[in-house]
Image (tube, rainbow, N blue to C red; front, side, top):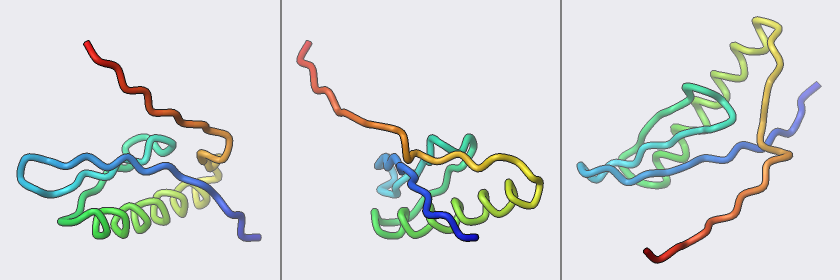
Length: 76
């Protein structure tokens, strides 16, 4: 049975112009791309591979379906 899962991807622009993509729900699931779109595609591939390993090992597969996010901007 295929289950729809939701994952939040955090993108960070690096000094060299590339983008780091971090998947907080999957510890250690980090990749990068030359553009935002490339980083997102690489993150999708990394998520699929990560989830496949968890399933093969019989581990639970976390996701962000119950995670809520809010960005707060403060001035100091």
